[in-house]
Amino acid sequence: MVLFLQQMINGLSVGSIYALIALGYTMVYGIIRLINFAHGEIMMVGAYIAFILAVNTSLPFILILLISMVLSAVIGVLVERVAYKPLRKAPRISVLITAIGVSFFLQNLALVIFKADPKIMPELIEKKPIAIGPLQVGTVTVTTLALSIVFMIALDLFVKRTKPGKAMRAVSEDKDAAVLMGIHVNKTISLTFAIGSALGALGGVLYGITYTQVFPTLGVLPGLKAFIAAVLGGIGLIPGAVLGGFVIGMIETITKAYLSSQWSDAIVFGLLIIVLIVKPTGILGKNEKEKV
Image 1: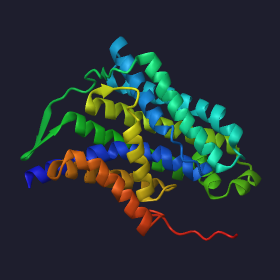
Image 2: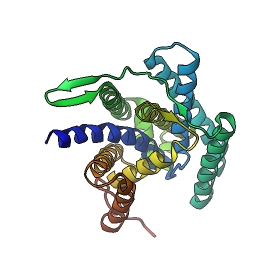
Image 3: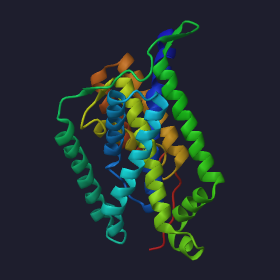
């Protein structure tokens, strides 16, 4: 039972990272119906920014985290303006291919700048066990879970309570009607990319700290798993992305603990196939009728 509870806590920690990254996917999809496959690379960029700041400065962890999120948000907006905005009225397949191209571009740019060998992330959070009864929980796990929950709650409040958040919801519901109501759609889309990229960078930094390495393809597998989490929960829905992230994290961790680490990825991707067959809209998604 102690081992099971330990793995549950680890699963929540990993799942919170997936949830943060999945929020970027689901927010962008909810606004412009785009699967931004370059989102995992934004996560990687955020991790590299944190690595550079940690190695070359003596800034505290929270400042490194915030700077990484802000710079990643700027990069996310630039990607949207340069690569996606000109294709706003193009067929979806064109935008999807562009997203894949941006993903490979950012990967290879990181490869040229930082080379292929993994960089060791400095110890930004002091690693020491915290005893909770018979359980031993690391400070990295506690910090990861706490930061993830805080930013998820902040995002939920932002979307529901603020004027820009309500504009995002309006554009998600009906872009044309939002324009008629005086909402600046382009600014709203840019804001969505900025917030999604910042959350992706947060996930990237926490992932780099947890696994102690940063490398050019860092965002590929976590990005795919976060995408699965978004689809599992109901892509386009913020609560769905959070739920899906935690579910994927729990399944992955328990599989590694009780079955085999070699099967964990196969089981996660198999879960996506099952969900698409049984309930394509995801756990929280609802079927929508469209006029033909």
